[in-house]
Length: 194
Image (cartoon, rainbow, N blue to C red):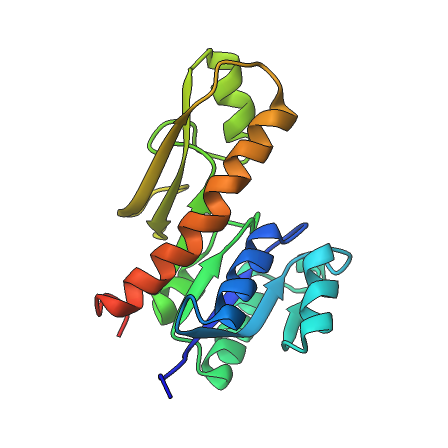
């Protein structure tokens, strides 16, 4: 039987990319299993989904901790205990700090709904629509100390000439839900994440 790699998914909301990654794991499309879900919002749907799937969950309220360093140290320890090899940010709306980067630098990836380096930050699709662009896309990149910085791993562009954020989100999610599992698989198959 093929060795399954251990990954963690960090998310703050609905968790559609969690669903896509978990489906790919279960179907054997990627040689991985999600061993931990981390969320900074206890009421997020992704927390419920993790419980339904029987995946250990770290759900926390940042305000309950004296500092970012404190809660990131706890998260890093839980990742080590779970044997996490790769952290996949999937709509995690916090900037990763030095505490987590020091333990997992080079092994944290993020998915972003724009063709970076254009339209960084939390409202990328809205920014792109406002700018009037006609080619949108998705980027997967390594996480470093900069906002939506880090080396780009994969990108996929698609045309869209409308002006509906809802329609653009649907198109973006279609790309994300295929590209993220494919990229995770390639990271392990290529030996980039060892």
